[in-house]
Length: 72
Image (cartoon, rainbow, N blue to C red; front, side, top):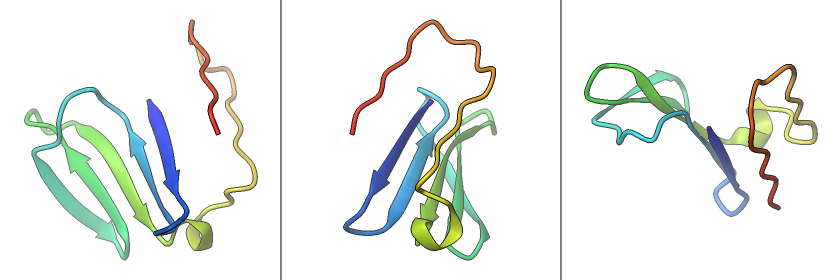
């Protein structure tokens, strides 16, 4: 999973899969779910992210991973 925040557009993209998206659906104003060819959620696009999310805190809890990458 990769999370990218773009301050110039105040948008966030959460990439959930390495598969490309083939379909997108807006599920609420400014929130778009991207689906892969099998119908699985591949990503989440959030417009006006700073108004919808608390961007000052990011917590991972009990995530079973072998690799940790943090970049600012």
